[in-house]
Length: 116
Length: 113
View 1 (cartoon, rainbow over the protein chains, first blue to last red):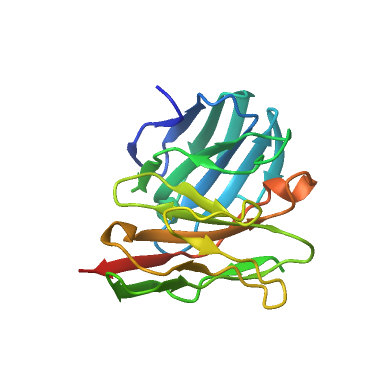
View 2: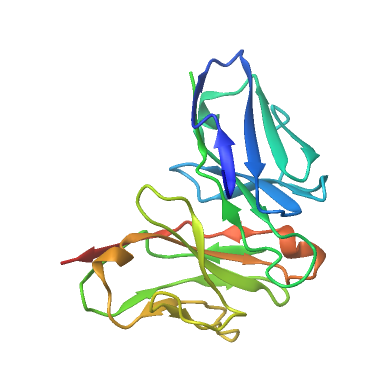
């Protein structure tokens, strides 16, 4: 599969559960991102990884824990979430730190998360 | 503070009419500006960026540093332009702040036949 893929596409979890969202990019990019999109707020940048190092963390609660084992994979580990965390979580990648167009975002389809 | 403002949540125009989606920004320095679009049942994708200075699908956007605006325009709207449009900014491409991307709240464009 090409581009940016995300699994699962839909997830329902209780507040005491632990789950993980997965993102994979097949574009040879060096940077990956997690965004939260909800009806109440615009697209919010959560985490940025460049060359597998976290370079941005926008004051995200610790119940969200990212992991970037290599430049093609990005995870978002979830634990003890709250109902207000229900949202669409989007993954994106970009070329990275070399040359022009480094920060054009290529988005995945998202994971629709519902916290009960 | 760094901010992107899209004052219109919804914009509805007739087919063939001109379209202007407004975007104002606040940034200390020289940001890079983008417009992203999300068509129904499709993923968010880049429409255009100010440094390219190109027209995509008939849309153009000019960066006005004096007014700190980056409005998206199209002279004649088409039904297939109906979508959600997001304005975004980041730091200059080769800067450390290039990864700090801020999106506006989005404008839903509806083209009436």
